[in-house]
Length: 344
Ligand code: TK8
Image (cartoon, rainbow, N blue to C red):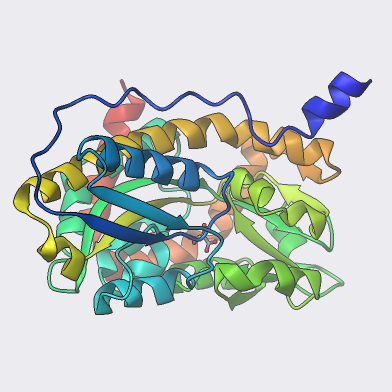
């Protein structure tokens, strides 16, 4: 019926309202209009939480700080926008951690497959001292890393065939899937190991690459697949949850240095508050987006524990190759946090 049809086409789930903005108004330390470039669409948790970030800054400075958000990679992709932060031609951005490994190699810990089994564990890691030292390690790069937040569990989609096993990725009598990856060596290794043909590419070029058949598939959280309309060019989705990747909200160090200390403290606080809201929105979006994609005609393959274990086993060589390079101690620290959350 009409109601059902309308519900099926809803643009977003029932999302929590942003928390009320409290805290005192910060004294007058001049006016700043900040440009923020992000990769995702206006319907994404990334955009909605960036808006909230801007509202906090505006309200608590009585409009002296304004944030203008440019979505959909219109100012550039993650790599380009980080370079713009370095040169000061952009004030704020919100890339995935994965392409940021060129600045802080330890971030590659987040790219290890199946490291963070639950969202609770992932959030605990993102809020840990270990994670804070990764943010601190941006010092001297020209980028001020403000906070981690959730990009999320990545799921495989493609236009060629249903995928329930590593063999389906590699193809037995057919060729392996050509899968777009982020510009990150661990992701490249994951898909190589699974027998795919990984093709690193900027996110902004991905839709047309899939539309034109340059790549068969890609992997991203369900909410990104939905809000970027990838289902229009991808018939199959698989709930692989193979990696949980974060976003990092970043400011140009040049912009940061121009701000009075009181404004800097406010920016840091607003970033943390908006990240909490972003994680909440991303959580609300996740399963809902999968179900929406299904209603819109994507054939979703859900994987049981055994099937997930098969993927986990297949990518074991990625650990062996990368754990020593990323740092066994760091990975051990992360695993300890995960275990403490899981045993709670
Ligand atoms: C958006 C990207 C995107 C990421 C990717 O700027 O590239 O696949 O997951 O969300 O950061």
